[in-house]
Each structure stands twice: as structure tokens, then as C-alpha cells.
Image 1: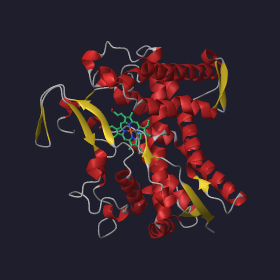
Image 2 (image 1 turned 180 degrees about the horizontal axis):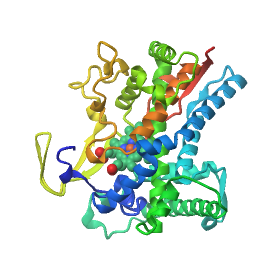
Image 3 (image 1 turned 90 degrees about the horizontal axis):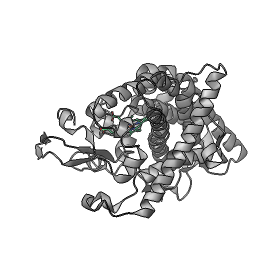
Length: 407
Ligand code: HEM
């Protein structure tokens, strides 16, 4: 994937993805060409690169404070009830992704094309949940391209509806943003950046790129953080080791991003969760547009390549007891980190995930802060709830945990 990049960097899309990505208008699904290079630069410069992430620091600080505040309130009000981790975290993460994308979180919005005011929950469903489900919709014609002239009305109607609802909501969000700009409000977000590039981007491209930043920021980070909290709640000794490490480094102060580099065990928890619960179990299909060699195999031009990250991470020849969640496997005898890249969780080569830094910052600070503030334990019966659904290995049933505030 790294050295044979030039032969393997093109994407091959299913019919559903062709429609939902407006025929490869977004960074993650685009072919490797000049358009790709330009839009990858845009998203890194304005949102996901390390300088941009420094500028967005404030959104993450607010987010983590809101999260802990909400958990404290829930535990105070209902001390003997289990807390639904996802309800709180997913909503705050969506808020953060809106702030980075359009400069503001929204409670509701009037959508002209749908003739209705949509709540924040409905906006989330249309922008994130529905397209994630649509992305794995199977059209039997994907497997028989020479029969593509036969209609598949049910499939087309479902995907087309997802497409038009998303289009309508995104247009409404962009319109609101333009009104705020016109009223003199100073905003610094991805949309401002994209609008400043409007000589080289069409309105449709701007809409799609903005939506991409929202959906990608809202999903996989939530998946890995929820699985990490599940594993820590299930493994009290490992939770305790993490807590002691955090206390040694932070004392009575709350964890901050600046402290992450001093917490190797926290990093090991994050990477072991990526290994055991791969949020992207299969790298989006690559297409060999010329003959190539990969891992000792000859790949003829025209082949589609699916890299099975889940399979590699559960391979007994590579990992001892791969089914066990064991962060210690990423530490050497001295407690230093090693071999993090081995999980390939963020892909590899030039098409490596652009949001890896953001995902790591949000997930690690959230995990650490929640362990600093509370002792976690699974609700009785929750241990068996390990089924998953969807494209990104989402926990089927939201994590339910008992949380006891620490002094
Ligand atoms: C734990 C969280 C995440 C995981 C495991 C993950 C994983 C991946 C993987 C496996 C790829 C494909 C790489 C390849 O083809 O080799 C990818 C691409 C990408 N991801 Fe992520 N991702 C995560 C979070 C994010 C976030 C928060 C964003 C923010 C918007 C993001 C944006 C992207 C983009 C733009 C690409 C396309 C990169 C390119 O083709 O050049 N990801 N990600």
C-alpha cells in the first residue's frame, strides 16, 4: 500500500456509494488525481492537519467539559441507574463536527425543500446515520455490471431519498451560515475556507466536502471510544492501571492534550481498542489500474483489492491470543510504546486517514478524563453485548455502565 501506491490508489465504488458520494466528490472516495490533491490539501489545511487542530482546540475543550458535566449530572440524579454512554458522547461529537464544519452547533433548522423544521436528532439521522446505512446497501447489479440496464427500483428509491434529504439539509445549513456571515459575524470554519476557494470548486463540491467532514468526524471516533470504555469497564485492573498512570502525571489537574505524550498506557488502550474492534474493518476498496506486486503476490491490472484489517488484527500468527483485549501488548519491558502502526487501523501510504490526529486527540482525552472522574463498571448482563452492526463496527447495543464518581 505504501510502495506500490501509484498503482493502487484508485477507488472502485458500489452503486450506492457512487450516488451517495456524488460520484467520488469527497476526499475519502475520490480517485487519485488533481482534484483529489486539491481537496485533500483543503481538509488538512483548514480542519484536520496539526495546525488546524490547534486552532480547533477550544471546541474539543468545550466538548470534554460538556461530556463530563452531563455524566456528573446523570450520576447525581440517578445514582443507582446505568448510564447510556452513547447518548451523551455521540451528541457532543456531532456538535463538535458541526462547529468545525459550519462554525456553530444547531438545535433545529428549517429545511425549505422538505417544508419542515428538523430537530438536531433528525439532522443527525439524515447527515450521519442514514448515509452510513446506505453505504452498505447492496445492489445486485454491483456483481453483474453487464446487467446494469435492468432497473432495481426499490434500491434506487431508497438511496435517492437519502441523497435528496441530505442535499436539502446541507443547503439549509449553508444558507444559515451565509446569513450569519452577511450580518457581520466572524466565523472561522471549513465552510469559510471552502467558500474562499469557490473559483476552483463548484457549489455541489463545496456541499459534498462539507458533509464529508461532518459524517467522518461523527462516526468512527464514537465507535472506538465506546469500545474502549466498554473494555475498561469490563477490566477493573486495567482501568486501575490507567487511573494510576493519569494520577501520576496529572495529580489533581484535569488531563489535557499536552499531557498525552506522557501517558503511554493510555495510548496502548486506544491502539489495542483499534486492533480488537477495528472501526474500519475493511479498507475501502482499491482498484489496480496497472499490474502491481503486493506482499509477494502478483496483482493484475483491473483487480479490486479489499484489505481485511479485521482479519489481519485477529490473525493468531501475528498476535498472541488476538481475541483478548490487552493494551500491554503495545508496551515493551520498560513501559514504552511499540509497533502501533501494526494495526493498520488508519490505512496506509498516501491515502492514510486524514482524521487520525483528531480521532486520537478526542478519544484519548475523553477516555482519560472519564476514568479520572469516575470508576466504571459494566451494568449486569452487559458483558455479553458484543455484537456489532454496520460499516464501522458499531456496538449493536449502546454501552450501559455504572459510574461511581471518584473523590
Ligand atoms: C478511529 C477513527 C478512524 C479510523 C479508524 C479511520 C480509518 C480510516 C481508514 C482505514 C481510511 C482508509 C485509508 C486507506 O484507504 O488506506 C480512512 C480514510 C480517511 N479518513 Fe479516517 N478514520 C478515523 C477517523 C477519521 C476522522 C475523525 C476523520 C475526519 C474527518 C477522517 C477522515 C478521513 C479521510 C478524509 C480519509 C480519506 C483519506 C484519503 O483518501 O486520502 N477519519 N480513515
